[in-house]
Structure formats: C-alpha cells, structure tokens
Length: 290
Ligand SMILES: NC(=O)c1ccc[n+]([C@@H]2O[C@H](COP(=O)([O-])OP(=O)(O)OC[C@H]3O[C@@H](n4cnc5c(N)ncnc54)[C@H](OP(=O)(O)O)[C@@H]3O)[C@@H](O)[C@H]2O)c1
Image 1 (tube, rainbow, N blue to C red):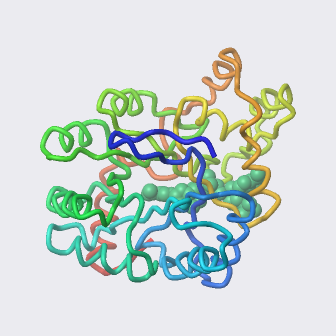
Image 2 (image 1 turned 180 degrees about the vertical axis):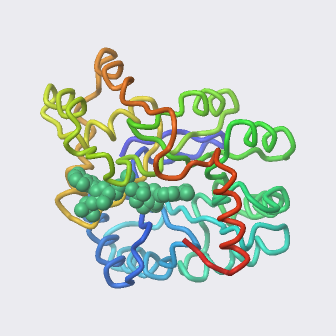
C-alpha cells in the first residue's frame, strides 16, 4: 500500500476505509472484515460514529487470527465536540481506546473546529508524547484556523482531514497545508455518491483511457496530488474496485480535464456557513452525535 510520510516521519497509507453511518455493529464488522480482505489497512472511525467497538472487534479478531499484524494497521479515530476541552479530551481518548480495545491509536484527530479545541489540542500533545497516539491532527479546519493553531502550539497537527473530491478541490486549503507541512486527507472522496459521480461523463471519459471506472478516476485524482483518502463502501466488489488504483496515474492533461468539475463550495457540509457552527454546538449541548 503506497503511503505518505507525515511530519514526524511516520508512514500513513494513501488509501483507507471509513465507517461513517455504519451504525449496525454486525454490518460494520462485516464491512471492516471485507475491507481487510480487500487489502485495506487504514481504518477511519470516530467517537461520534458510534461504532468504535465494532471496528475494534473486527480488527482485533483479524490480528488474533494472524491475518494481519497490529503494526500493519493504521487506525484513525476522532475526538467529538462534547469532549473538546483540555480535561475532557483525555477522557474522550481513553473511551475510544477502550472501545477499540487497543493500546494506542495511529492517528487521533480533533473532529470539528469548534469549542475549546486549543485546550483539547494541549491534551492531544500529551497523548502524543506518551506514545498513546502515533500521530495527531485535526479535521475540518479552514486554512486560517489551521495557520493560527500551527502558530500557537508546541506540536503542530500532522494531518487535516477535510472534504475533497472532484466537485470540491479546495486548492487553496491544500496549498496552505503544504506550506505548513500538514498532510491533507480526503473525506467523502466519492462525494458520498452524490451528483451522479459514478456516471459523471468527464470522469468516465478520463477513466476509459486507463480502463478505469469513474470511481477509480475520482480516487486516483486525489492520490495523484498526494492526498490520502478514506472511502466507504458496504459492497465487496466496490471495495475491490476502489483498491485498483496502483497501476495507473492521470496525465497532466487528464487532471486538467477534471478542473472544471470544481464547484468551489461544498454541497455536503458548508463550513463557511455560520449555521453549521450553530448546528454542531446545539447538537453537542443536547448530547447528540452524528
Ligand atoms: N472528518 C469528517 O468530518 C468526516 C466527514 C465525512 C466522512 N468522513 C470519513 O470519510 C469516509 C468516506 O466518506 P463518506 O463515507 O462520506 O463517503 P464516500 O466514501 O465519498 O462515498 C460513499 C458512497 O460511495 C459508494 N461507493 C463506494 N465505492 C463505490 C464504487 N466503486 N462504485 C459505486 N459506488 C461506490 C458507497 O456505496 P456502496 O456501499 O454501495 O459501495 C457509498 O454510498 C467516511 O466513511 C468517514 O470515515 C469524515
């Protein structure tokens, strides 16, 4: 599995498997097992997804069965807004660790740029120093919030996981991350299946040249700009198809052909809209998760 080197020199796979909305534990375990069989080694969950236990069960079972070694896995989980404060963050981390039944997390992220994320970050720095998290980072941080965080912390984030797909390029955000040495990671690299991405004419046309599908073309487009991606699928055939990225590379002209697809805004979750900050804070007061 090709990987990228994070600022602290650890390797993070370029492709991983996410489990958003896999609320049913049995279904989640089945998908994680199928993804392992298809060759995925990076798994992305979150406290708010409500499935860390199921992910942990499937991964630990595979380790015990000798299918994979723990050090071959790259496990990502995230601190939810309710625990985004200096004292609460440790409790949030320990709960995730216990649910996953693991001794350490490969990458621990602050899930949202809300509430006391500076306080939470200080706790993440401690977790990193204690070797409980091999790498630490953030998610959904806009360029200016990221610059500010990087300039006011002892250990700057190593990763920022944000929405990135052919309909939302976020070139400026990626440029800022590169300048800061923060590795971009894409969530919803397949735009959650919206906007008819799998039958998009441009993606199909580009992909056809390489004998690849629109989904593979969309994923490879991010990989070619050295963006790590985490995708979700409940179907073995799709998991295998999405893994078929390593025998081709988009030419410069084909990358340019994808440029016009960029809307310049998100149709999934618009972080520039103040209502989103209000919504997340209100959910958090009511104790709701995603
Ligand atoms: N940090 C954050 O705030 C944040 C936010 C959102 C997501 N995430 C992470 O990113 C991961 C991926 O994003 P996502 O789950 O939102 O969406 P996504 O991966 O962009 O899209 C998932 C959809 O694509 C379909 N799909 C996958 N491969 C396909 C293929 N080859 N052909 C046709 N359909 C295909 C899946 O359907 P099938 O089940 O039928 O294959 C599913 O409906 C999440 O699971 C989560 O781990 C993080």
